[in-house]
Length: 512
View 1 (cartoon, rainbow, N blue to C red):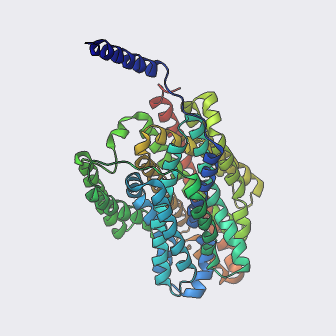
View 2 (view 1 turned 180 degrees about the vertical axis):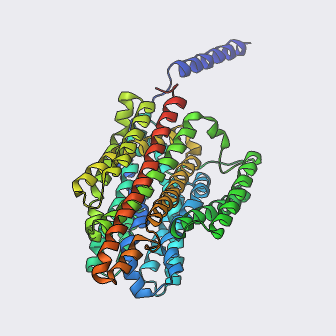
View 3 (view 1 turned 30 degrees about the vertical axis):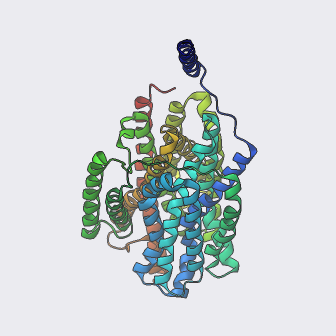
């Protein structure tokens, strides 16, 4: 007979607990020193992945003399790494959610390290291409796994935002340091050393990760979406290749057919994702205006940044005639401002709000792009340094906040998939910038040549060099034409950033 009051009392206690949990939500504890040390460990492979995007730009002439690759093989040596990363990011992010994020991080690090050693001692161009492809597979696991682990390690919003800022700074810093470190190493050693520098860093990751990184996985009720993996790869890879091919060779039947094939399969992928029981991409995320706006910022921001980084590098070396290492060092002010403001982005957002921070950062990046219009053949270097530093402030803020908003908008168990979407947007944006802005600059350059110019500024300058004194006028005209093409690309990128700033300010008006 006494059980009824006891049961009633238990129900009342449970009800009180529920009410207390709603009115007094549990505040997660602050991150420990071990957690922050884990962030340092997570940032190491990200720096390597971003460095390996740019380090070969300086090493290619040396590699060409050593391995004698064909023109097509040279293109694949440079691009196959990025192709595989762009195509596999979403897949690897989802796979890490299922088999364990720390497990896939270490697996990817092992693949990346093995491929780096293979690349360093490759005796032929074919083997180097294969090693670079394998590095792309490993890199595609490292980026989403490291970013999604941050969501688990830093449950507090402010700490997670700061951690993502540090992660973004590491990625940006690696991309900027790649040419500088590559130039210094190539000055003293053979070309393979640019790959071997990965090995000690990855060894440190293997030693430290089991002690400072947690494991996290999702118990999935449905089998892995293999059809979605196939459709995403068959859609993304031809599309990315078509964009890069159009940037290098101009729009052709081949690039058009590949782009069309990729677009059709991506459309099929999206239709399949709506019906899949465990989709790679949760399309419902795009119902959020904030989420969609952040993906647009990643695409357009990286399009402007990637396109102008390529064009200004050519400007410094071929127009203003700085050597390779000097041109690489000229990129450091932008790298510093990107890194600094990536780390400080969360504090800026806390003061003025995420919406204003994103909108204003886009305007800063636009101002830097439009400032390129003031450069000419004889401009002082300090003007370039100031403009790119201002641009770096804008990119540092927006890239860190975009990543934080995307990761913070989904439950921790889906952060791997969300980070894959975010990083894929960054990769596609870079490819679009090289293709669209690079092609625009090339078209303007050729239009001003009246048949006198070759397909590129470098080839035209080589031709002018063979003409003796008569070639000096041709070389000057070619340099001025390239600057005009760079101006056109900078104007398009700047206007696109301004328009996107207005869109972000409108669609995120409900967000502080």
